[in-house]
Amino acid sequence: MKKILFILTMLISSITYGQFTTINPDTVCIGSTGSIYNVTNTPGYVYTWTVLAPGVVTGGAGTNQINVNWSAAGSGLIPTAVTVYATGPGGCQSLPVTLNVFILQIIPTITPIGPLCSGSPCVNLVGSPVGGVFSGAGVVGNTFCPTTSGTFTVTYTVTQNGCIFTTTTNVVVNPIPTLSPIQHN
Amino acid sequence: MRNLILFVLSFFIFTQSYSQCNGPQSFTMTPVAPAGGYLPGTTVTVCYTMSNYIQTGSNWVEGFDLNLGSGWTSLTPITPPSNCGGAGSGGQWIWLNTSTSTALPITTVGPGYFFDLNSNGVAGDDFGDNNVGGCSWSFCFTVTVVNICTPQNLLIQITAGSDGVWGSYTSTSCDVTTPFTVYSGTSNPSLPTVGPINHN
Image (cartoon, rainbow over all chains, first blue to last red; front, side):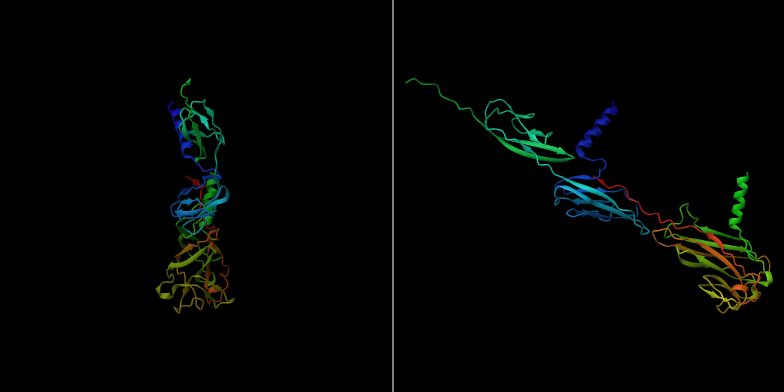
């Protein structure tokens, strides 16, 4: 039982925090400003990093760990985006190690619905790409239920490789007209 | 048992080498060479001893010439041999980068320790160190492995020569000089290695 709990914990951690070990290419969320890259440190070594533009090293040069700002990078693959080699105490250099980087961008969409009438049946919500999560007032699972009138914001959230992308749409729910009793003059 | 005997014999041959007039030769290297070879930047102290010298035709020991591979640098003498001829014969052992004989054919050797009998700073113009009886010559020097990132030749050979070949004595009885190999390995640059890049 303990073992099962441990496995579940590890699984949940991996979903929450992304990679344990970096797969090549490495996935970076578009707009990321603080990606940390490292290699195992060996005392006495000096590490030389190269990051292709528009990536910018913002800290850690010369050490085994750097911070990189990818905020200026557009989506897509950047081959050999990160390279590092070590120089030993005797001045000898290691072979370089490289990492490709894929800047991930997803633009979710919601198929518009409405206007709806207050109290009318729930309406299915359709988002793209599939697999996202709807949220907001009036949202029940993958449906919108117009119980009251007003303008409601529906949010669709897609999570992939630790990156979170959202979009919203407004749903107008009109009140049902009310009539006074029929008068006979 | 046979293997053990062969090993002991091999070791004996390795550490005790003879040429025409040379006595037994031996050496120490500090630190001892690692399995993969010396690392760049390592300074090694080499001490060499030749016990006895067979003075055929009254040839005396004129010097010890060093032959170093290109992987060595910063050759530094530490201690010279003692004068085996005794104070009465005069002379001294000096370090020379080159020494040229007056005996024919004219031969230039060095660097190494050479015997300067007339104490004029020149070894090749006089006789060698007279072995008055079972003498031995010992000296030490240091050398450093060059900082080059490819394996380098770390050969160390020491050749003993008589005054008939490197001095001024006119005898060819000890003209055969055989290098004694102290070390014949290569340097181990031990290139750094970098593991995979992790993204946290």
